[in-house]
Amino acid sequence: MNDAPHDLPLDDLVGDWLTLPALADALGVAPSRARGLVASRHVIGVKRGERKTFQVPAAFVVTGPHGEPEILETLRGTVILLSDVGFSDADALRWLFTEEETLDASPIEALRSGRRAQVRRVAQALA
Image 1 (tube, rainbow, N blue to C red):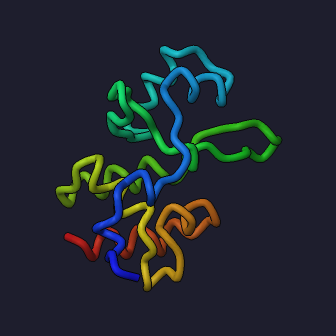
Image 2: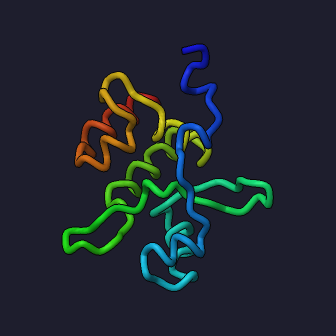
């Protein structure tokens, strides 16, 4: 592999993205609620694409306990922790989607599999 993960474009790391209207549709909520999820730091994203629209990773949407789509519950605390150690949203996305040797997965994969404590321990060590 020629490129270190931190050198890969964010699009190569994240894969699928959702605009805020698409996020609202995926969750079955009003667009204002999707904007509120961003404002409350339940999700983060970046402006991307040809038209520079704000988008969030599709991996943040998971299937809830009753089969309904929802935002990954443990994401917000992890995002806040990364922000507290000085990460921008773009840096936080890059970290979340880059393979982390100590987790044997990317942090987002570890969060999606229920390994919140492990992910946060690694994130705290970044301070």
